[in-house]
Length: 518
Image (cartoon, rainbow, N blue to C red):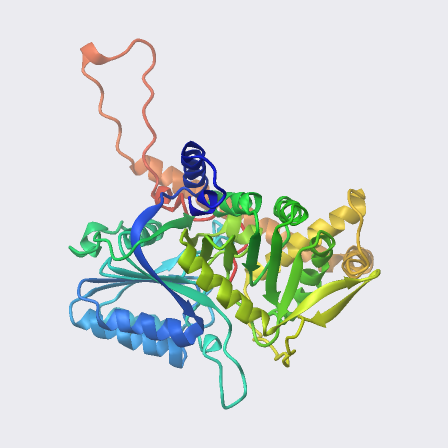
């Protein structure tokens, strides 16, 4: 692997490291690709639309949020036009992510044009918690020859409004050409099959799909719930980095194990930097985000906050040889709860481009520093500080869940006294103390306010379980009996009849729980 080669170790050690990364990521290293770095919607959206317009065989498009606005309608018209010309167009959208932004008329327009549209993990009455796991991937593949992976959803927020002085959201994406695009097709097929008949993967690949288009090796890390593949990769990179590890994340939640890995790297002399939003699209989460700065800063990690509208990019670059771009945030939602997709590129030239972009981003960021016992803010050296703008109002449940995780960590530390808390975290602890006191007061003076919701939830849970049990019995009654073996093949003892396959088996990879990022 490139990041290991740079350390000058032996070829045998390099082979072992290569095997470790392949197993941790659950993805092989694929050579022969051409990779282009795309910044913000101004570069990503036009590239997506050009590829759609040039499609000859198939278009596979999945995204967490597709909004029924001028941006979303532009993509709908482009997809519909190719479908009318005979191209096989398939769109997979997330039920929760598109619950408000996209209307039924939007999906009807696509279906009427011949686009096959599927909804990922819609709400089900008898599975009340299954909706928490989401498909957070953002990919587009055309003819199996060109693919795009990014953190961008389809919405006007990524474009901004120059007339109103609203800057576009900051985000990063990739354009990939070469054999690795087939891995993007396979990843799409995995999500597609969870909500309907499987995809004919070979039918989505042109005859030129497997041809080398460059010399860049990369891995397509397609995460599914509870696989934690990217988490293992992030841990390995934090452990192997020798000089630099620069991270950008939209909804960073400092889990103990990952923060420890970053702290250890910084104390070993690695230049660890973290760039996060200065204003989130959920303002209530900002104090919780800031509460996690202290352990990083005390270990020498440099933390920066983006000045402007929302910073939504999810990237990493290490030692000028390894880089990652994709949909995963550095929090438990992405690591464990969602279907995500990221591309890990092992190429020095591409990593240098990522580092240059990172330094440009720091010119529009403010560094967070510790001064004495109090936390204070300062601009990065010799860099101007621009005016922060208000972020969008709409957020996703994943960010609330991520905040809940951080809140739980802080409150747990206060209760168990297993680590020292900083002054910044006192606000979180104080607020957490108000909640149980308020609930206790409500329960004492207005018991029905607590009892009625509890009764409704209990009734819902009971009915949901009964409904599921009745469905299972009905399926068992309708199932075919196993054919008896010939008499000479019947083994001694009782014969176990296999249970009939359940329709829910196709959803086995659909997430059952866990927050979902944006």
